[in-house]
Image (tube, rainbow, N blue to C red; front, side, top):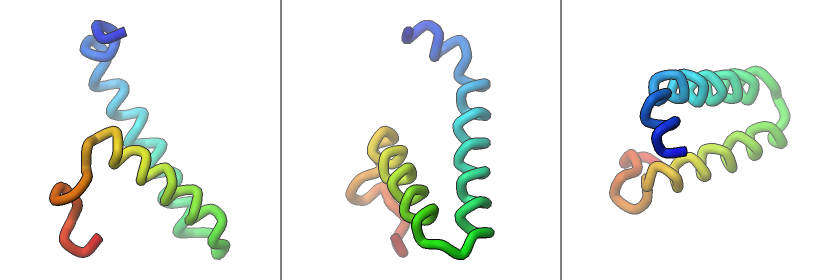
Length: 61
């Protein structure tokens, strides 16, 4: 599994960033709060996986 991730890191990064960009565009274009809440949960999960906790977050967040 680790070898697969290392050998395909560029494709995985493109896929993850494309999913995030699409979800962000969807949340921005729709007026409901439900999709915004869903996107916020995804972002929190990604921040947790990236260890963006404590001081690693932007100052305004």
